[in-house]
Image 1 (cartoon, one colour):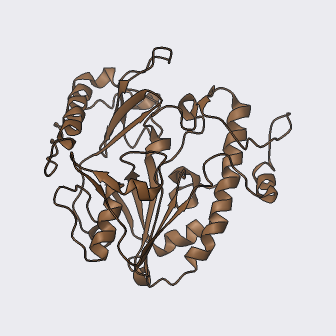
Image 2: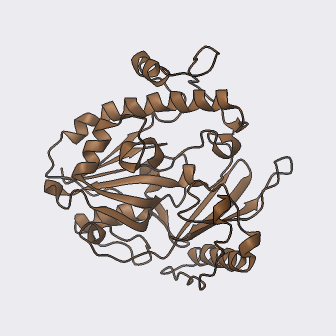
Length: 341
């Protein structure tokens, strides 16, 4: 075996210790992080519900490549982090042991996609604690892989996060490209745990993972494929992405997003008449981690420039041939409201 890719569908960085979660024990993920290079700013390009194998169908232009995994590379897809959840009773008990409400601590094992009032603290906490038990179940399952021979390449990631009440929705309900859906964990354990402990702050994308596998296996990538191998980053070099672009459509609605290290714009393109109003948004990063303080009006000129550039990128991605990415406009955003966040 040359390499193994583990995809925990529905896992968010905020769920686990290597990305700062201090209340949810994830000892195997912590151990894997100590053996790996950890990427802090990894994002989905299309956070769809398909398996990671299907995500290897990459479209950089009018051409779509169904990219087979090279011989000796195995992809393991873990789906039990998506509801309905069925963690062991012991893990559910541990998640609810410091329950603070008068109501009986009842796990919410099968939340249906839909709206959730963000002010409903009881429902939000039930959802969060039940999901935490599922994360601990995954961490237990991961232990066998952490113990494997460290002489092979191991890549751990997720194809998408999930909405757990943040921004008022649960599950696969609307394609809202907020942090909880598109920011993903990514760890790369090189053979022999080379470069273990390194952290990478540069922006990376889902399409970069397949490019990494192909370079590792010595296979050239298609000429019009815009994924970049992460192996140079693992050793302190590599091309730096100035921005990442995300897109998603679901239940008759659609939107795109663009993120740089400093800002993020979300641009809805298809809306339903009976939905709450949803306008283009602008957030300052990394200050506004959870996309809660829309500063578009305070930065209207720059936001509109980014939105036009985002649409130019989408148009360019549909043209045949190598992808020519439009350049970012000169940054000019207003931090004056920082004290309000």
